Image 1 (cartoon, rainbow, N blue to C red):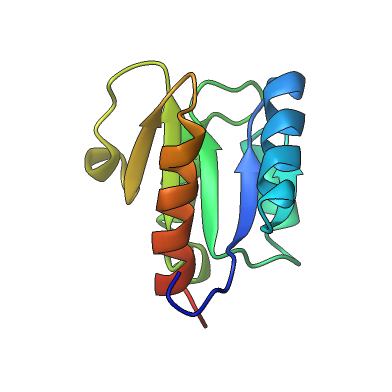
Image 2 (spheres, one colour):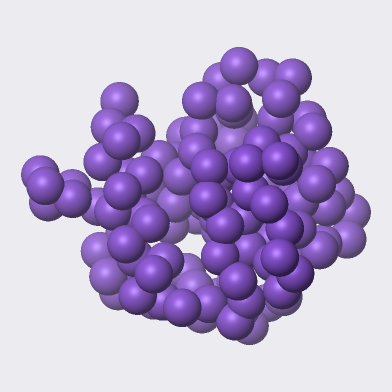
Length: 124
């Protein structure tokens, strides 16, 4: 980010090890991080936390990433938050209503580049 500001990130990932590892790595890189284990928990977190960007797994129990994205379309406040989807498949982020996508396993350098872009765009 040109201004040096780090993004605030909501990591939505059902795999405990992946979620905790991402949260730790992103925090070590200077980002503020909240985490949720599924889409339903993410919606609860978003009541009080407005991140610059949401990193969203698609394949999750309780409320999948696809279902989360559908519900997001109904809420103007949530729609304003950029979403980066994370998937093992080649899902089209734009077709899903997301701004970007990453393949799993994560390329951490690419993730940091995306966060820098969306963090600076989302300065509010």
